[in-house]
Image (cartoon, rainbow, N blue to C red; front, top):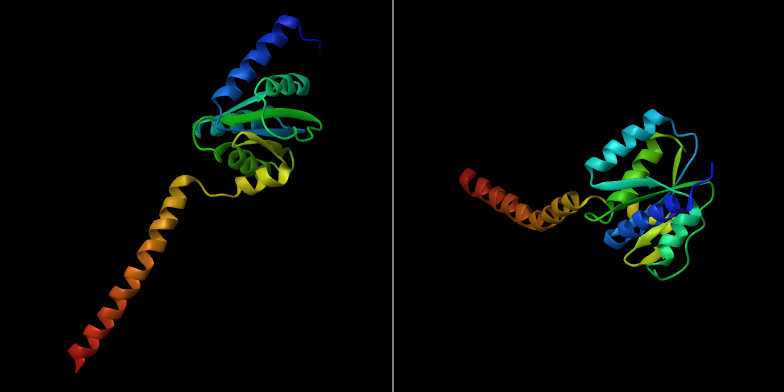
Length: 165
C-alpha cells in the first residue's frame, strides 16, 4: 500500500529525531512474526527503555543520511525495523538478540549504529552478548573481592592451626 508524501515526511522526521537522541541503533530483520509475539516483544523492550519502530528501508536510509554516520549502511534484506535507546547502549542489540533466540529465527540482527558509526551484523551480535551494566559491575566487584576473600580464608586456616596446637 502506498504511503502519502506527508506520511513519509512524518516517518522520516520521527526516525530522524529518534536517531538524533539515540545512544545506539539496531536494524532488525523479521519474518513470520505473529502479532502476539510482536506485542510481547515491544512491551519487554519498552520496559528495558528500548524503542522499536517498523518503517520502509528507503525511509530509514533517508533518515540515516541526515545524520552522517561513518561507514556504510549494512545490507538490509527483507522487512526491517529499527530499535534504539537513549540509555544503556547494549540494550537494543541484547533485547533483539534474546527475543530472536526465543522466537527461533523470526527476528535477526542485521547491523546498526554504535558509537557514531555503522556496525555490521557480526559486531552488533558481539555487542548483544555483553552483559548489562549492573551485571558487569557485579563481576567487577567479585574480581576485586576475590583476593581479599582468599587472604581472609588463609588467615582463618592459620588461626585454626594455631588454636589446635
